[in-house]
Every structure is written in C-alpha cells, then in structure tokens.
Image 1: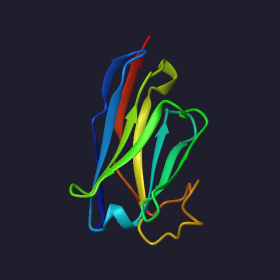
Image 2: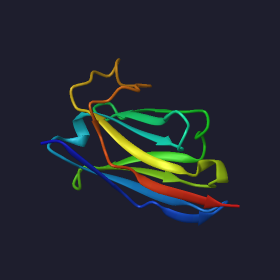
Image 3: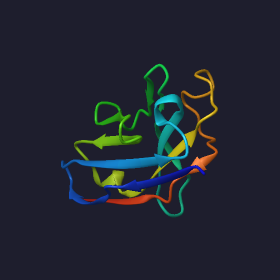
Length: 126
C-alpha cells in the first residue's frame, strides 16, 4: 500500500527557513516521480517542484527558484523540500505527491499524481 506522510511544517518569520519531509512507504522514492505542491484555501494548487529520481532530474517553479531545493534520503525513503528565505506569500499547506510508474518524460513538470500525502501547514509571518 502506497502511503505518503508529510512533516516538518510550522511557523517561521519571513527570511527564515524550513525543511518539510515526505516519508514514503509501499514504493521506492529512488525510482519514482515525486513532486511538491502547495495550496492556499480558495486558490488553485500550485506545483513547486518535481524530481525524477532515476536520473535525479529536477524542475522548479519560477516562484521557488533559488530558494527551494529538493533532496532524497534513499535509506529513509524520504523526499525533502528545503525552503530558504521564506516569504509571507509562501504560507500554505504543502503536499507531496508520487507517481511510481511514471517515465522521465512524463515526470518533469507533472501535475497529475496518483498518490498524495495529507499535507503539512507552513506559516510565514512578516
């Protein structure tokens, strides 16, 4: 059974940093298409970054470039999103997603994923 559990959210002041985690079970993160998204109530879900772990190819949304970084700990089967220089506009619920059967071509920039976590709240105060 595929399961994604996010953690690491919280409250931080503008300019601060957080690292959110996505612990996966039921499949190998190291051989899958993974992504991070966020959503503010009343707004559309925004794609932040995707990674095709088989090639370590990554893609980042313009809103995150230079501030957010993906990483994977294969031993823990966990995907991370390191977020630096946070802004109040980054306040949202952050979700990870997985598509274990995706090819590289269909992974980068992907928005439709089969599996989603429950989300973790990130609040940035100015």
